[in-house]
Length: 272
Image (tube, rainbow, N blue to C red):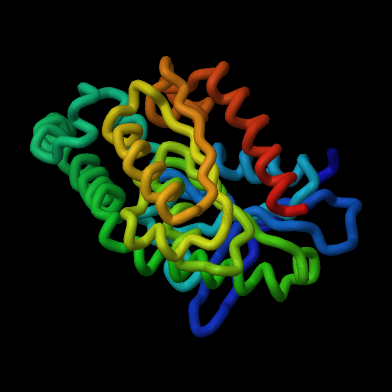
């Protein structure tokens, strides 16, 4: 399929944003829209390719750049610097990912200029949870943009997010009543008080070996049942965290294939 894709800067309600947009090139009418919410790595090549895949399914798809400030990325959070962080993390013991002290031990083995740059970017990446309220506002501004954009105006809007973006997709469902549906890939789940505000169907996909995240599923299921909310989910028993990311060692082709089909079925239902 021929796609039209571009980076767009926008301003909504005093908030400046930047997003990657992809849509079928030869469709001139408005289309249902999907917001693709990044992993911790940002709107990297993998997220842009996912955005294109959703556009190929017949939607207008956008991936907001949550690391852009006033529509611009700093050097510290640039794609090249984050790629170097990925390479560093792939070279250290897996337990260092969630252990700041152990990460710092590994960083100390690097030359000073490289060590300082990576430490700066790592601190921002792993300290980003405190910025979630601000990031949700950026996502709500993205909904505003889509409602007024010529190729999506008047159409329904859904979200899908991965890891950090999965948690944000869930929070957007809690905070944005205009959302028609939300998909969560291995993201932290909202508590009952937040779930009370959800007004759209939610789907979730989780790895059975990703205990920190997947152990949250039973409590969320119970809350959604008690609140009479719609939540459908799959747990892939042999899959790890980030099983959908085909650029990482955690990729699980069987789980990813099944989840992708069910994600498109979910969009077909909620965006019809």
